[in-house]
Image 1 (cartoon, rainbow, N blue to C red):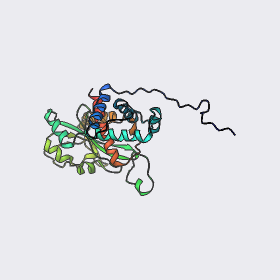
Image 2 (image 1 turned 90 degrees about the horizontal axis):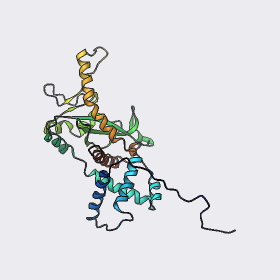
Image 3 (image 1 turned 30 degrees about the vertical axis):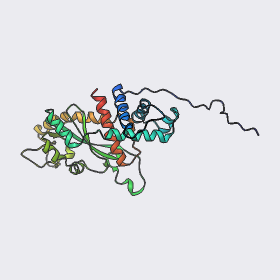
Image 4 (image 1 turned 120 degrees about the horizontal axis):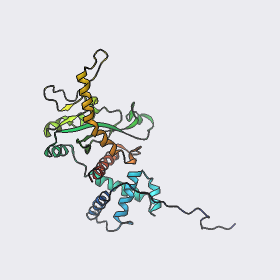
Amino acid sequence: MTKTKERAEGTCSLVYQCRLPLSTRTVNHLVGLLRRHLKPIRSRWRILPPGRIAVIVLAVLCHDQRLADMAGGNDVSESTVRRWRDELITLLAAQAPRLDRALKKIAKQGEEVVLIDGTLIPTQRRTGKADRRNYSGKHHHGLHFLALTDEKSRLIWISAARPGRTHDNTVARHDDILAHLRAADPGALADLGFRGLDNDVLNPLIVTGYTAARTHKLAPGQKEANRVLAVGRAPVEHGFAHLKNWRTLTKLRTDPAHATRLLRALLVLTNLEVNR
């Protein structure tokens, strides 16, 4: 028997090119962020330059490319690509605004209303009791996030990850949304999931619609008010749509702590793309 280490015919690795629908501004932002990070940690050498690293990480986030595929196409290990991804996600997440600062900035710009809503990001199903916390009857399994946008659909803040079964009001109370709104003084438009969060009848900061009951139908004026509110809340849905354009959110395969950093990093990248 003759042994050989040469590859059989047709077994060579194939590499293809793929276009990223992102601006140069986003790539340059990541490159500058990485270069500023390498100086304090005294990392003088990387196997690839910062520009290539930024493009690889953006491909993973934007197209949900497998780490092993990106590693094989760039002659690095899968663990190296994973380390680069987590490193840049942490750096980007640190740039995400805090709730109080975001609201103060909105008030300083002269805007009087923010839009608040919750969304569920699908996750892989877990086994046993760990799966029950992430189960949502509407969207099955996922993690719940609360977000604020301005009237131009720009994301200004996103909450930490909560189990999928968590109600919008529970997250809002946990993050003291109402107290921060009163401190900064802008109002908020919300859907019916936030009814009961603001019980101030004379001067409510969080405006929600009217609900109909079996024994109480909505008057024509109340229906018109709900329609106007729905039109005013449309930008927050656009903000979530921009965020979910990152295909890595198609189905999360990570723990809640890392999911929080990931969503906040994507908030920064989304605002770079939307505001370019």
